[in-house]
Image 1 (spheres, rainbow, N blue to C red):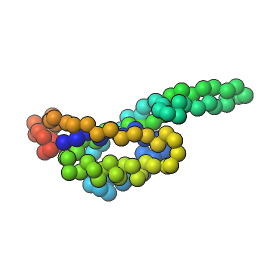
Image 2 (cartoon, rainbow, N blue to C red; image 1 turned 180 degrees about the horizontal axis):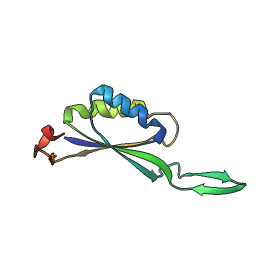
Image 3 (cartoon, one colour; image 1 turned 90 degrees about the vertical axis):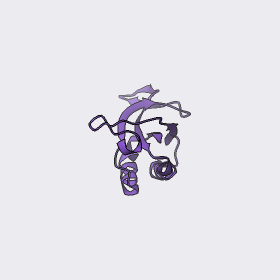
Length: 112
């Protein structure tokens, strides 16, 4: 099993969720986060004064999948989240040793 963590632009969340649902992925965790990468934030003007915005709002998706679903899920996220502009985000794929469903005690892929 693998865990996919994807950091994407907030306005792309619905597109990514719909694309993953069509792929058959039923569950995910979504967290609102802030951060920056190569773009190093940006400046905004508010009431005539210029402010530096160092941390940009992003959304982090976390999905645990069987190994055979990971490649398709990553491709789907890339296609749905891509705007072609700087700051589209990153996708991390991490190994998962085990999963346990608390309610039933199921383990492994059956718990996902």
